[in-house]
Length: 182
Image 1 (spheres, rainbow, N blue to C red):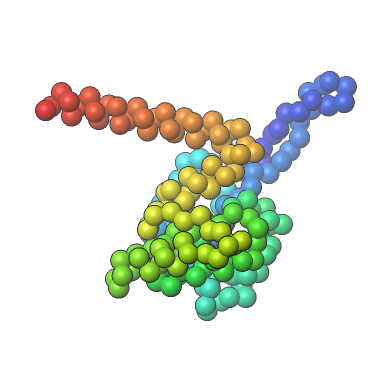
Image 2 (tube, rainbow, N blue to C red):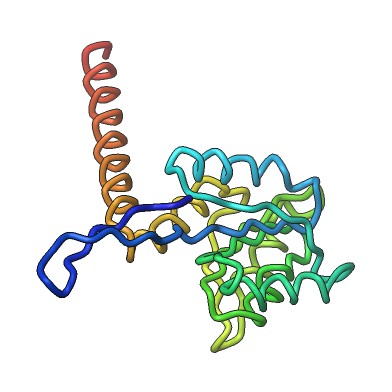
């Protein structure tokens, strides 16, 4: 997405600079993770944040996963979201290859309901952090990615503030409704 940024030039005149909004890279370990990824995609779309979705496995395609993470900054990414279940090493494998923020989404499975993925994602060694959201927390991962990008983007910051205000208003309306009914 191309943005226009207004700055003041040397002569005090308003000039336009073009800059590209950083993308969010979404990497899932398997296409079975797509329902969780879809929540992230929908949220990023709502904020008009560009993204790319890829399937790379920490175990079956480790070189491709590493290459993606190593080149993410140069390829215009500002944040990576990694989605995996079971052993869930994907987020850590990507984080080991980049200094960009990595957000892990542990996915539930039939065996341990996602607790294995949660622990694999959250228990990272010192120096290689992975921000971890709830099991199947696609929407929150996307919101966290937007918050990270909003540090340098006032437009995104404003959209986040508007969403918070709208969410607050929705809860207060529900409160009024339930209070009137009961």
